[in-house]
Image 1 (spheres, rainbow, N blue to C red):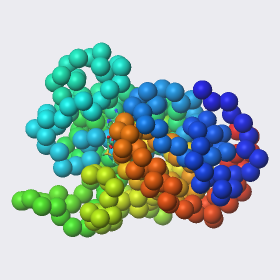
Image 2: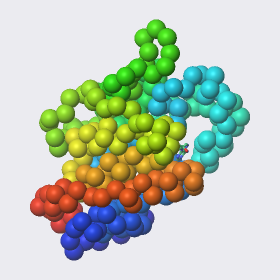
Image 3: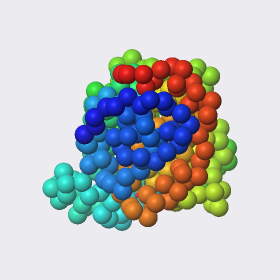
Length: 279
Ligand SMILES: C[S@@+](CC[C@H](N)C(=O)[O-])C[C@H]1O[C@@H](n2cnc3c(N)ncnc32)[C@H](O)[C@@H]1O
């Protein structure tokens, strides 16, 4: 898909610029959000192009019960899923989402550079199902990051206050910041700050990306939603590619990423590192 052309200079203008996926991969543009199915989008990306795949798939981000999952219809449209009629017709339960995400992890393994990372937000219930399925893609399970929302949600008993990010690496992980622990204390977004029902605070993702990708590196999110991963990547002077199946939500993500300015210091560092000086 991509003819790799060497960009003359990765400057603030290039990293902040919306372009085609090919331009983003080549480094002559900073970001692109496609209205597309996750697996269709993933399959079109070249091998070893991304430093991190950081994603927040449907139903794995907390708050959904099995019965709520059973009520969901038509979220998944990829041809390989459609051919498995049981999946669509029986609605998406845990087995379905595990199957989909295992397919995504196989693609992540292919598109990540050696040492690159996959991060998947998920609900605690999914951990024992999802972790081995994702690891069977060839990626190695490196650990878990806990997002502590600093205040419990509604409910009884031990009211839920955290979400999990499962972290995998391709081979031996390459990391770019050693100052971050695996518990991130960040308040959940207030309603008025959200552009998506399950929006994550960009700060949570920003702190993760700073560890797993270099400035100027390429971050991919197959389930972009309102664009928090793109916003975080752009803040850090990283390139971003995202797919979102719902065109109205994809438009909101583009708006949010467009509105976010890029950290020029990070872009300068990427240039110093020679990230685009001929790979
Ligand atoms: C949990 S949300 C992501 C929220 C996002 N992290 C944010 O902070 O706004 C998951 C998103 O995946 C999208 N989605 C569901 N199935 C998809 C598929 N097969 N391909 C691409 N996107 C999909 C949904 O429309 C939803 O917006």
